[in-house]
Length: 369
Image (cartoon, rainbow, N blue to C red; front, side, top):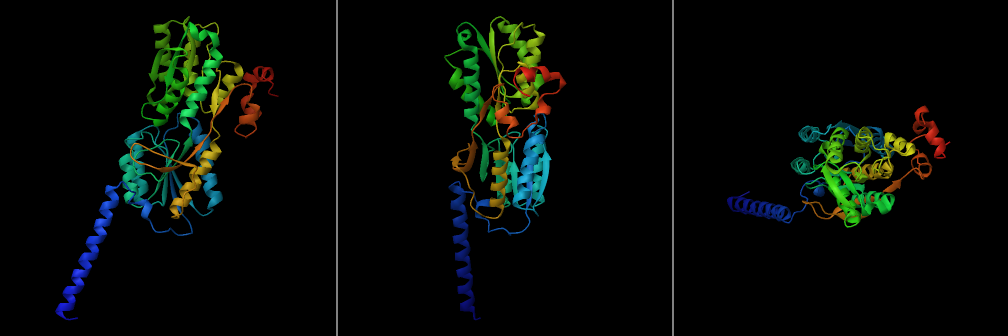
């Protein structure tokens, strides 16, 4: 090649590189997903999938979410592998777990965030490494590729309406206590928003708490404070965002000497919560059928890892990412009247799981035989 031809080739290569860099820059400036979204199609064979769950205080994650997700992945891809970790409510630990998944070069990550904001940097790192992230149950910030959860505002509306209906005329003269979830969990804000959309103007909220890490012990402490502040004769109901906290609340109510417990809401249909409902201690819970949510997460993860389109019912905007493909599942109000047609029918529990000797008489009274 003579000197003239060499100079022409170098100039052409430089022009092509500049054009390529300009295109990359414009994608970033427009907020586009420049990592996982532009991947070439993955192999059709085995995939490595990272599964990160937030905590083990709530029974659902180890008892239902993890085994259901792993089972669906195995059903869809028998030779795919799942690497599972639980952050145990520590946001910094979860960031380290995300970094480890990126180092291991997993094909896709299913992430249930401890703290939706603080994990955004790790999600960005994954995206830059070409690893798509499915936000599971909680809408993590950063360039996530898909999201599945329940309609969380609707969960709050279901809880609020059930509580209001049960309080009835007592709402005119009494007050309720709101025991909301952790301030680091975006779902807690949505539950609260949904509940308040029903409750505001209909009943006075005497005390409202955001409960650190969803801990039942914190809910118990806060409830004792509310009883002292409001007076037990004025409390006509308690909005509890989940079943674990409802347990702590009910312990506080009993300890304060309530002759009749006011109605207490819950969420997650935990076994202890269902048993309290049967016994008449907890008024209701929200049954969220975990299998559809887990199935959606597994399907999204495998599709993304293979470079395929995600099947989703709608889209959702996070504070950092617009138009995220989303599948949202409807919640169900759970009371003593529909235990049989919900958690028993769906196989979440067996009758003898609920109706242990301690609850046998209460089960018979509720028609559970």
